[in-house]
Amino acid sequence: AVLSFSVGLSAKSQRSQNPLSNIVRKNHSWKQVEILDAKTREKLCFLDKVEPQATIAEIKNLFTKTHPQWYPARQSLRLDPKGKSLKDEDVLQKLPVGTTATLYFRDLGAQISWVTVFLTEYAGPLFIYLLFYFRVPFIYGHKYDFTSSRHTVVHLACICHSFHYIKRLLETLFVHRFSHGTMPLRNIFKNCTYYWGFAAWMAYYINHPLYTPPTYGAQQVKLALAIFVICQLGNFSIHMALRDLRPAGSKTRKIPYPTKNPFTWLFLLVSCPNYTYEVGSWIGFAIMTQCLPVALFSLVGFTQMTIWAKGKHRSYLKEFRDYPPLRMPIIPFLL
Amino acid sequence: MGRLTEAAAAGGGASAARSAGPPPAPLPLSSTSPGCAAAMASSEEDGTNGGASEASEEREAVGKRRRLGLLATIWLTFYNIAMTAGWLVLAIAMVRFYMEKGTHKGLYKSIQKTLKFFQTFALLEIVHCLIGIVPTSVLVAGVQVSSRIFMVWLVTHSIKPIQNEESVVLFLVAWTVTEITRYSFYTFSLLDHLPYFIKWARYNFFIILYPVGVAGELLTIYAALPYVKKTGMFSIRLPNKYNVSFDYYYFLLITMASYIPLFPQLYFHMLRQRRKVLHGEVIVEKDD
Image 1: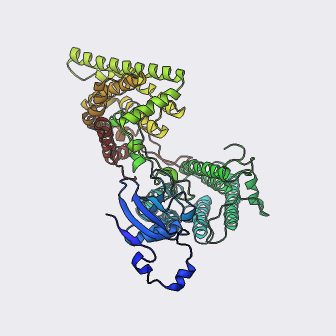
Image 2: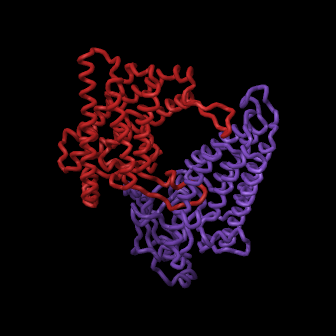
Image 3: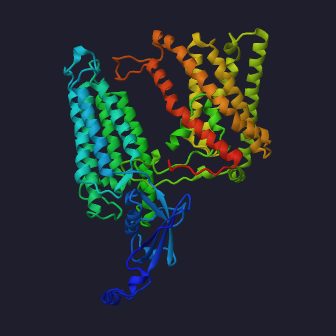
């Protein structure tokens, strides 16, 4: 059903419109916007008298008025049914459309905010690991309930793991500036399964009564701890540097460069040093605990982060002509 | 959900599922696909493969083949003919055994070398995807071939007491018929002469074969459980210096359980492909 929705004044009331606004709005080149379903081509909404300077964000808000179940975050509007989504900042006038703009709508599905997802997926491992560390009943045999490991490295590992996730939670709340507000709701289940599952799996072995400490003893643990701490500092430095690239509330993208902080000098060699440091942290943790599940977790994380780094690297190259050629996505000179 | 469906081929239905068109159009990748996960937003993926009709699929396939080097075409044709022949040999050997001996006992033993050879050879299909001469995704092909390798080497070969179970014959029959149909379909497609009945067979046989194959595989794994538990085979216990453990018994249980979500997804995917290819239905796929 075609729904007609007038933005501004209807034809009838134009005659009785406020003469003041008549003077102000000298430009009567209103645009009309029709929104069709991208798959069925059904007409979902017709907006007439839309300001040419209206942004896609404003159009989304208007669309929500007639279809409240589709809040703006879950709307994808595009010029071509199979094309790319238009950005919220895009201005109607600047798009290649005539007086009547035809936009195709695709429902992105229920959305959830990035912050919510991050907080949930990071709070889980923090909590779950501690359940195993304190040997809460029903995990290990009853005689081990609430006992404590006699190995120093086990206590150290708990501190490191907990620190890591507390850091992530704090960064989510105070450091990161997100490009996107939301992601599909389904992601929270997928991501939490991954993080929580692996956390439980690792924690089970490290805190197990039959845990075997590293082969090379204190030497190995010290080296691994150093790697872990350096990489955590590095990762944090990069997050801060990235934050400083972008003013609060904006979505600008700039090439990141090394700052005075030596940890950021890795930007000379890679596009995503935050990922490099993250992998490094987990390798450190794996060496420290000498636990194969940790190594596997590092490997899976590395694979995923490499995919992301390559994507980011490609976007940088596409967007910036003068992008430093020496940089690789995630591993200096290699990958 | 979309990507999982293709990627999750479990056992017998595995190649039946793969039989969804020579460019077996993987399901539409939506923005929820794994490649576009949490932390840093990568670009939104927007695949619209699902709407391809057989005609455009074949055109696509032909187009892709035109871009395929002569060498690749020759190799793929040879490969598919060889595999068709191999599985035919297997089928004939099975029939002959049953006609001569009147029982299925000893059947596996008599055909195991041929089975292992041709099923293992199918690992090459992953390479085909890797180097791009076959348009399937590496992940999909990998999962499908791996599930077969798992069944042959890690279950039937390794757990000798279950080799004479009826369920083994069940999945062997399903696999054999499926593979003969599938490889001859690919062969004829490559030669640009696809008889309708092969296409028909490919998109209809699975309706029976897929559940039969899955049943055979599940029953076989189930029969193997007691032996695995008793012997503790393929398992690692604590304590050990890598602080890991693995219990093959529970692994098998989880594998069996995984058939429950995976089988229906694959089966319905196959049914949708069938409706599109054989009846030219334009199906509006859900985003995910």
